[in-house]
Amino acid sequence: MMPDLGKYAGAVLGAYGLSLLLIVGLVALSVWQAVRMHARLRDVEERGKE
Picture 1 (cartoon, one colour):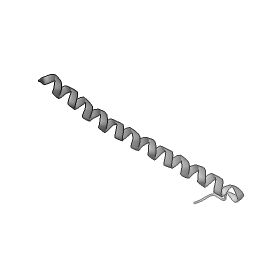
Picture 2 (cartoon, helix red, strand yellow):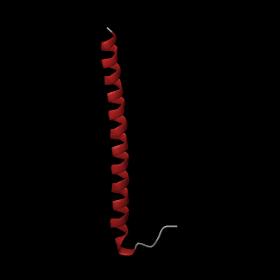
Picture 3 (cartoon, one colour):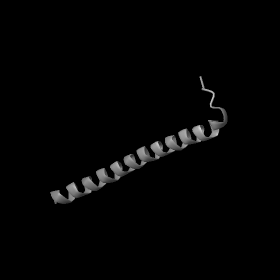
Picture 4 (spheres, helix red, strand yellow):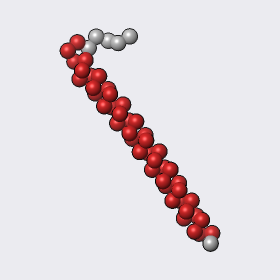
């Protein structure tokens, strides 16, 4: 299943690993910011009801 990468195997697999890590990090950051913004919006809406 794995293609023969020869002498470039380390560089290619490292690039794939780094890319995967960055994508997971960006998704986690987006979810974290969405949760924070949802909480802040809920707080602002509650203050507006008073």
